[in-house]
Length: 452
Image 1: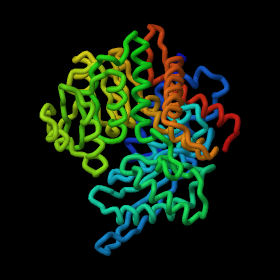
Image 2: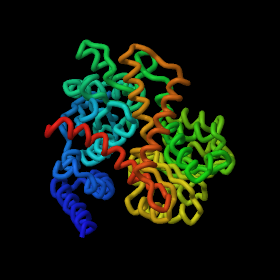
Image 3: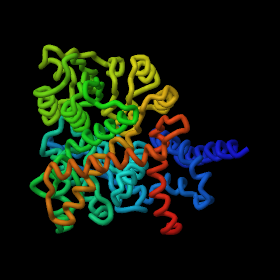
Image 4: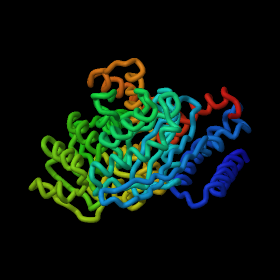
């Protein structure tokens, strides 16, 4: 009877969320994934009974949508839409990236802000969850156009953020250049120099190894996962998707730890390199990215051993470890089946929600080690948190210091996920573990603060 009650509660909760958030598929996907694992846990804890904690967590504390008018190089007026979702501030100021991409909409940003709340909780640092962005496409724009857009965007956003309120960072389409323009405009309008944005340049308060941090953290987490089955990364083969900072950081750290990366991918297809992507190939990847070029075909053209597969995803390549590092919903059920058939041991998400629910369930059913992005890619926001700390104490730590702290945080996140996710047969369900570990800290803070 009790099992039926829990199942019924899950169905009722999902129906409630669907009714409140129609036409928001990404957000509904993220909330469902959490509800399935967290509601059975809530049912076992008397102090959570009737407190509507998950209902409160799924409703943003504040949703800000605004117009961003700007003038392009031809003198034409352009109009974009800007957003900031301030999801949950129970454990600290809102913290989460800004994304500039044509696909940005309310559903995508709400899903990212919801995930961010759990991810930030897992880092153990005092950061709430938020996310923002605009449907602006930086591709093909001049530096001056990007500067004007960033200034127009920040002119409105600056009213809603601050070092003790909401600390945005970069995300897709928002790198060091954009953060610089955003920070400059914030400083000009508010007349204050504070750690209001993270991912800043080293010359004005940034942290060492921030660009690599997400990728490094993913690999540290993957290393801990492999240890649970008595394996390490040395000599293992890796299939990585993506072309940006995250994929770059993953490839650098895997190579450093003795693994071999066989693939990268862009929107045009993937590259397979049997010799491994290392050394000057990693440098060239960064060179292409910094020029705004994310075509995998151009990467393949430079190296004789690299083979380009147009319009395809890399999951058909046989490997020990798969790391999706591109974007949401890029690994589907048929990809999961191919990976399992080819003997994959471990799938560590580096992007936000890159695997569909069907794919995740398939990995879990086949007892493949699988980690959701909210746990394994938390190294980026953890290092942003370390940047906030450095700004607060007006000090800069060395690369080694930041890297050591990052590794400690990732080992800690892994331990929390493992402890909450261990099942009776010894298999670690990291999805369940990450959701519950992330939920508990936010829930305790919300209970202590009353109905606010």
